[in-house]
Image (cartoon, rainbow, N blue to C red; front, side, top):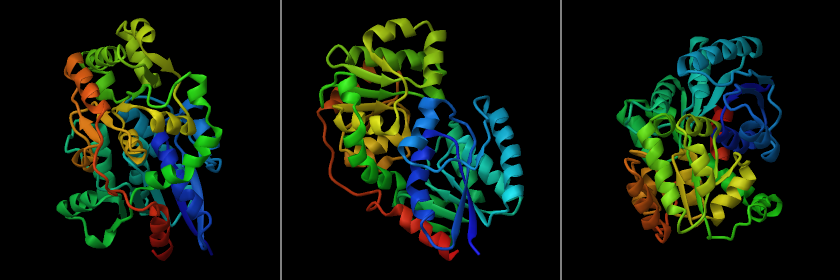
Length: 362
């Protein structure tokens, strides 16, 4: 009889991670996967296109939760995931990263005494004002299997007193995905031609975190800096729905649309090509920081801190708190010609195999 595993996903970075693990999990003997999509990211550009491009199986449950405040969104997820778990009766639940979908899945399973496995465990920004930090800390302390992407993440879990028996250094499944899909992106993506972009002739930016979009001063600093940088080189910005909304409310969207190259959110394959061929990547996304490194492109992180400290240590990532437009622009200029040291902090591209092997033997 197969061991049934329920996987919960809801947001773009989780689709990428789940694609790497599900491909291995579904080919493994003795395992059966049931996929739950919470609907946290729900439109075509933020969800459906990823399932198509990454060849992720159609979800067995699509909960259709959508957006909302943290409490309302997480509460609706908790209720509907619990219902699905009672129907499917899995041996364990698998969650990824640090979103509200992650937290709701882990809570629902733990309260039903279903074992929890957390992929990308042990990351810490040490900033409890970030909702993602709360989500990842709580999930780690609920989980029975903690799959840490780096040695630093392993140490964080040890520092918090979590038993060594629960912690596994797996490497990073996003590196698995980057290796697997790079050739497909080269074959299938035409985004550079569509946008008339030359390799290394543009800056790629992605902005979506509430700490930047919902704070008027930070929002103005981020986009003031990007517009200043655009005087020297085109800035391409796939625009997240939340960011578009906040720019409209601030009365900035029209001005920014004249100065930056705004596009709809990019699919995974197009995003790979944009990242690989950028002169520099400017982001507040955790996943995009790593993807830039996988393709050895300098990165500017517009936050007060980063979980991916090894990228800063290697010199590929520069953390620039967006406290003023000049500070942002200076950070971009300083990074555009930078190259970091070589290193392999995220494993060798076999994280999914390591994770599935542990789950098979559990």
